[in-house]
Image 1 (cartoon, rainbow, N blue to C red):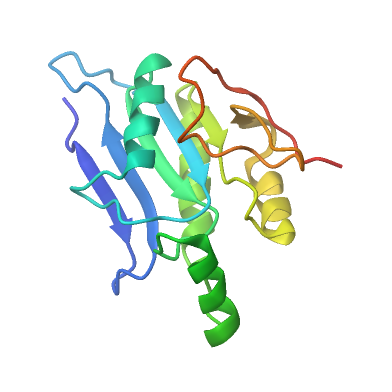
Image 2: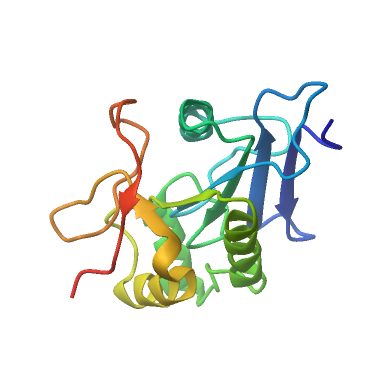
Length: 175
């Protein structure tokens, strides 16, 4: 049985959410090496240790459909904000680090968990990502990156309104 059901890792001031974890169908026969679905979105909204938002609810559904035991949510930017425009405005106006000082370490940990347990690493940050940040993440994630589909510019689509029947396909940064 897992030691946790829902967790969220925030910075001490809770301005950054580095990861969010949800156990899918916990029970007495919890696997020794749980299969993760790790999803890298754009930015955290208001989901936390207790509360799910519509995106997390949708991603839990995908995890169940794909026989994953755990959902690990990370983001390109760890700055907690429900609206990407306001997050980027914070960066411009106040020279704020919206990526977060510990964010890439949490993304690397999710990558390693996927590699160790035959998991799925889904990129789903949508069109609003900065080109440089997308390049950094593509390099960091490497060959395990998958997506549900891409936008016309090659960015991976956000999963909230996509059909439940889609399955992950390999994703590479468009040249």
